[in-house]
Length: 151
Image (cartoon, rainbow, N blue to C red; front, side, top):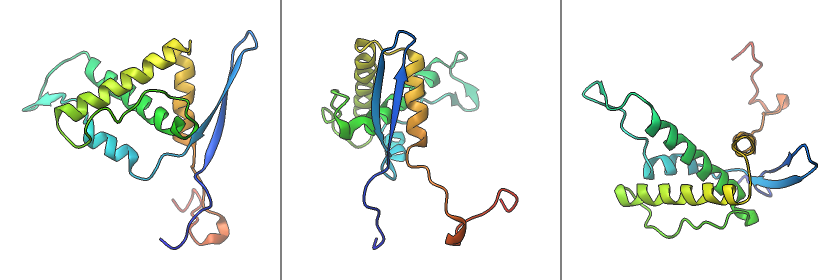
């Protein structure tokens, strides 16, 4: 690609607690295709077989999306060295060993947040911020702009 930006977009998120403690984290925009790659290597759990539900409680699906979110957070924090868990301890590709490797990695990330005394609400704030890093709106004069009425 001939057109490039100077740097990957970043955004700081500051978490403040009522007692005055605060932590600021620098999040980096996720690379193109990263989410798709994770979903291929750690596919969603199978919820139905032949049109019949495999489990009614949704626990597997909830746990999948929790782990998926932690992996995205870790990638956004990776350039700053905030997360110590390493994902290079398993072979990338497809299959059960790769899926299990991603799950172990996500669980290690969660343990880091627990050990650092982050609350679930604080982790969710970080996850929400990750989804917004790098979002841009085309300028009206760029020719790639649609008003809400134009859809």
